[in-house]
Image 1 (cartoon, protein in one colour):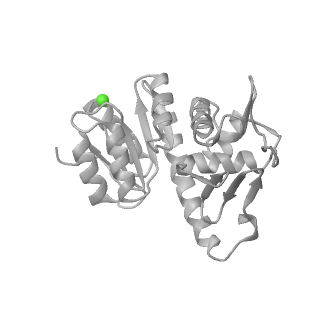
Image 2: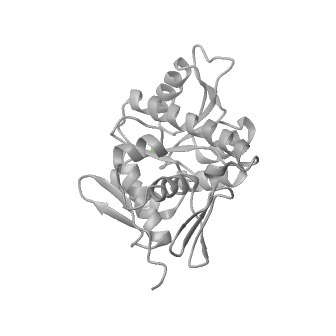
Amino acid sequence: MATTPAPGRTPAEGPVVLVVEDEQAIALAVARRLAAEGMRAHAVGDGQAGVDAAARLQPDLVILDVMLPGIDGLEVCRRIQAERPVPVLMLTARDDETDMLVGLGVGADDYMTKPFSMRELVARSKALLRRATRAREAAAQASTASPDLAPIEAGDVLIDRAQRRVSRAGQDAHLTPTEFDLLVTLASSPKTVLTRERLLAEVWDWVDASGTRTVDSHVKALRRKLGADLIRTVHGVGYAFEPPASDE
Ligand code: CA
């Protein structure tokens, strides 16, 4: 299927957003709404077209349905991310599908369960775009050795913020960019309970409270990769980083 530019008034400038969704009504509604928000939105209807369009358009953001004909959303996400890092907002059919996908470490940055509100989709898309801009600025600053990028050491956990690498007991852990940002935010205030809402605001730049499942799913992924003892759940409130004792 050819790339469908959003009908109506697609702006000549603004961030490029690729929508990969086989339900045409949803794809067009999303693309049209994003165009109305000043984004250059393009929609394609299957996985291979998504991979091809990502290579051609070099989008600033990809909105990706999980269940696609041909190559599914997981594989599309992997292939797109393998080419170059780009924020991915994944659309899932059920809440538990979000947990499953984060657990697999597919590398999407945020998840929304269908049916979703268009207003929320726009807000989260804008938050992801802001984050990507901030990350680029931080990377530019890192080359001038900013002191707030000093490594964080907590017991056997070493977080190298300049290189964006994490190890525990000398073993490298492979985190997605979002998992890394979440870990740094938690570890910067050890033994302090951070609410889900605050984590959403600081890591996802998202001020509404309705994305808390994304936080929970990413905490699960961090525990799986770094050990269950590192992040404590404070029920009904949020999470706290617990530095492991250095002598065991
Ligand atoms: Ca679908």
